[in-house]
Image (cartoon, rainbow, N blue to C red; front, side, top):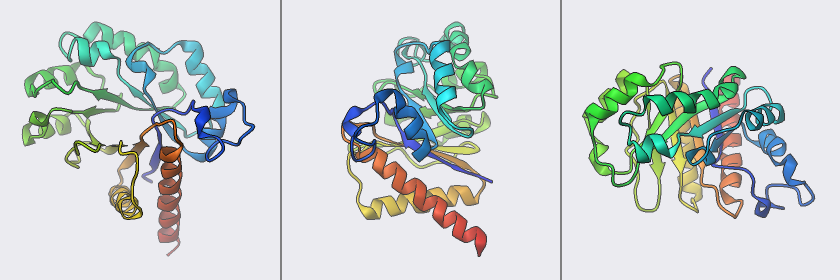
Length: 245
């Protein structure tokens, strides 16, 4: 059965007290508490540093079975090499997240491309050839030249998802190119109507057997975490009611 994996882009925020974290909860227990409310998180610090094995093992121990860590790809791959001749570093990067994969807690990798990186579909195809098919991946394009049928066809041929990133400046086309879907809700505030639209869209994907990864913006305020909890609960309640009927 397809599943919604919902969360935020990070969890280590004391300023989320007391609306999300209990007022007296020590920070070392944040991840354990977080993973009792939500079932996924997007790890962003891997954009600048490689994950240590001890850190991965700690995360695995502090989260329940079924929890998923989405991991942002290192900037060497996306911003320095810009997907070109990145094979050697890609292998190194993948080796650091192997413990998460072995524990069945690895979600999709997020390859977030620079805003000034224009479309190079041939180059994208070459990079995808070097990315193991066993590793789920989503691509966040931040230059509009990427939003073409040609790009989507290449991703679809490799079962890679378009990251649907929603900000106040830009909204990625909501196109399905993989067996799963990946959303980044980046706006600081969402109306009840907008959240209802999210729920409807997520349920459409689940009905087609697609897992959905949905991550709200991480901020010093707990609003993104509260949105994630609300959407996660509503989707699961509706799915449970549908299955009973």
